[in-house]
Amino acid sequence: MTWSPKRNTPDWHECLQKAASNPKLTLPLTVNSWCIHCRKHTILSGKRSMFIDSEPQWTLGFVRPLYLERRPICLRCQGLGQPEARFVPLDENIPSITRWNLLCFAKSFGKFDHHVESKLLDHWPVFSKMPRHPRMYNDSISGCTS
Ligand SMILES: [Zn+2]
Image (cartoon, rainbow, N blue to C red; front, side, top):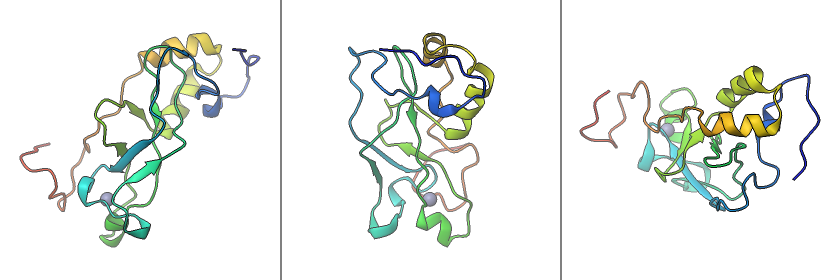
């Protein structure tokens, strides 16, 4: 594995794995995700109910790379006039990060080399798979209080 030369401008793409950071770690080849609000009621184009990411992107990390969340459009949210929502992995064991948060990371720590970034990302807080402000139409999660 080769390390990129030091960068001057933070670029979140540089915080993603180009090759496996840790060859002993097996990462899923596909990641299924759904709208954080609609969950099993998610509606995507083509009447799909989940987004299947066949080219998942992972952050650097030796023990716990984070899945970079995608942002497809949930037609259910759109139809209800709601803003775009995060898409989170169905698999509770897959930790994820938003593009925005990775950009924040790159701004703060992008000046370090990949080894340091990997160590930091291994301890970076994982994003919740539950919405911070559940929407009123969220009828898919019963018994869930905010
Ligand atoms: Zn939705």
